[in-house]
Length: 87
Image: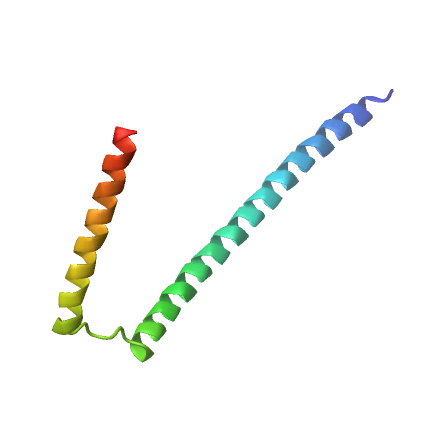
């Protein structure tokens, strides 16, 4: 074997490792950029949706009926937990 072949082989292996790191960095940068764009787009959509479709204000009548419904739900959950603990 010629001594130059060994040094060329090592040099090629080093170049392949460096190329691998370059591709890894490029891939990670691409994913990072995509995620940043995705977050910005989602925030923009949220602002647009809230601007054109605001949530309706709750009236005092609906809050009174909801509190009665909540008491029924709490009573049902409490009864289910008591029944479960007793066996």
